[in-house]
Amino acid sequence: MTQQTPEPPQPDPTKRQNLKGVGLSPRQILSVYDATQWEAFINEWTESLRSEYEQVQRFSGAGDKGRDVVGFVNNPASNGPWDNYQCKHYSAPLTPSEIWLELGKLCYFCYNGDYSPPRRYRLVAPHEVGPKLKDLLLKPNDLRSGLIQNWKNHCEKGITATAEIPLDASLLAYVERFDFTIIGYSPLLEIIEQHRKTPHWSQRFHTVLPPRPPAEEPPDSPTPNETRYLQKLLEAYGEAEGKEFKNLDDISTIERFGKHLKRSRQWFFQAEALNRFSRDNYQNGAFEQLKQQVFDGIIDITEKVYPHGFERVCATTDHAGGLALGNSSLAPLAAVADKKGICHHLANDDRLDWAKKK
Image (cartoon, rainbow, N blue to C red):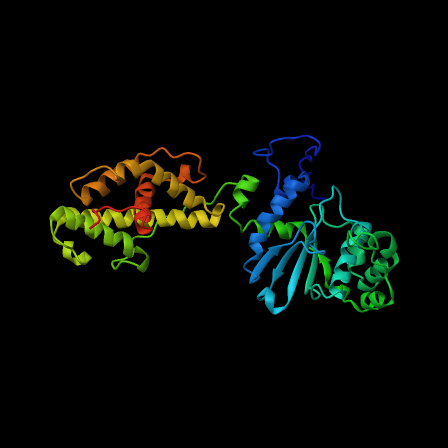
């Protein structure tokens, strides 16, 4: 018989500890989360749902009417199909007694016309569902009967804070018609795999990021998103030369400008590669935070007095290359070329100018 490797011991959930680097799986880390940590994780996880829906909204809190994370297949105003992910945080697998109120809210607010029945209703919990509830979810008619039997004790006084909701004949008839096959649960491993696709994964679970791919070589013809910073470089070259350069071909015979232009485009594409890597692996805004740090580090150099714009851009990028960046998750990845390239990104955003304004 093959001997199975035992699972690492579960951390004591009563102890505060730093889970970074202790070799626990994401599932084990989630198992000791408190309600606040679980909610933060769920907020991150919802980003992975945005590819499946036109809009994702959170309704958690007072007045949510039994909705937590909602995925709208179409525009919410169209009253089209939607899915509900109901997040429950307990220290053990969910039992039937812990969901009657949620199902009562679902049926009542659909009956009341607050919203249409969802296409899918999924329970989302750190310890998933227990065996009794798992069996019940496979038997929609028994689930309906259980809700009816438990309505008075679990739902009548809990659905709203302002009124009791008895299961009168009209509401009972609606519950008896309601489609309970839409109700199920989301396996934790499925949620974890979906979270893996978000920029929060590596920071949440302290995993090693994939290697950063090399930057693309700039194409021979400039791309549309290079227009602004290249125009500013032409103005800087023209100011240094005492003439106007209208296009890149005008500088092809001037060696120092041609070499500088080639380097500048390589740096721009290097920084753009870091931007793409950031979007795939880090929280939203990480690259913008890095750009702001570079801006703060160079702006005094840029605003000094120079005889012409070419000297200004060279002084700025030279200073940027030596910046010590901190307080940014991307700082350890930012090479000299990235920092110089960010200067051209800032120029592209109209945050930096090289030539004197006329």
